[in-house]
Length: 195
Image 1 (cartoon, helix red, strand yellow):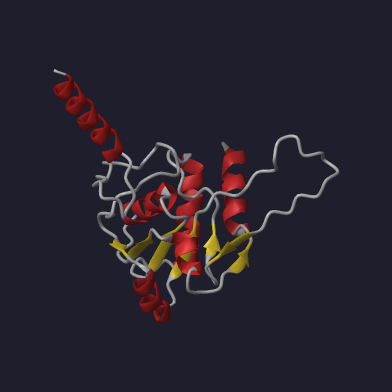
Image 2: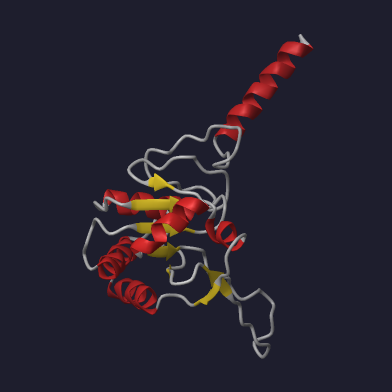
């Protein structure tokens, strides 16, 4: 009887882990029907329907086409309890020439922020829905998956998801200091104020 109970417990654990396994996990993580709304970090699927999942070699091969590189890493927040008179200068490093739109991969994403994201991508692509776009974040980050899914839903035909993220890039290449994209930040703030 204990063997059966233990087997059932292991099977239940396997199902729970299956809901959150990394792209390189031995556990198959299925794509959710819509956007992923759970914790932003966790095991991700190996696929993104309608997009191309690329590794470092795939990204390197795509770079001569000058894709729009969209970094959706969340911005660091000032630590609680840090005195106001103490400087706090976080630095985010990213793939060179990428556009950093912190939080653009969140789900749910407020309608005004989704509008701002899609408007900014339209500006970056020159409204060319066939222009290659790469979304990325950190390894095991659902934000870049959600951002890619959002672009596929908006009709972009050459969306690439780079699940290895900034860390996967910096294993072989230099990174550059990134600042939040001013147009994304301004548009998201302006649209929020209009509501």
